[in-house]
Image (cartoon, rainbow, N blue to C red; front, side, top):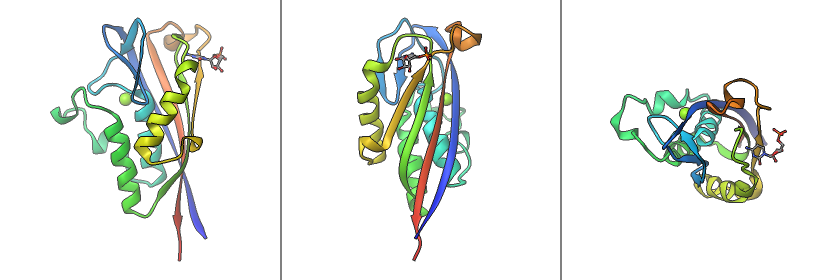
Length: 162
Ligand code: C5P
Ligand code: MG
């Protein structure tokens, strides 16, 4: 028997010229990138929060406060890896990840496989267990006006019981 738990994550960052657009650890060529204390990788942040949420371990800001200079311009895959390790210490393994990035442009579909593989490698999962989807905001609101981008994620964890 396995105990199954699910967790939800969400993130938003501003888009600004002169910053890299890093999504799931993959740098995507773009006119604008994401602004933030770390590398502002919204996808990694949303998945990190989803893992922490499923294990009821708080949230990303609790483990990686943006006041801490250690995380300045940091690689957000480190957050993801750390959340996975914290969950694993409590007996939880990641079963699957499903995420959506909401970004007006550029088109991301050409990067889907690279992003899935990078996330899977970080989480020690088969890429088949990592889904990444893309949506525009149909020109509506701050995402549609290309002032920001968002990501949502849901994660399932399992813990085998004796
Ligand atoms: O937002 P919309 O429904 O118009 O998106 C249609 C498709 O375009 C998505 O299913 C996705 O495959 C792709 N897309 C993309 N990159 C984006 C937004 C959408 O590849 N930034
Ligand atoms: Mg963030």
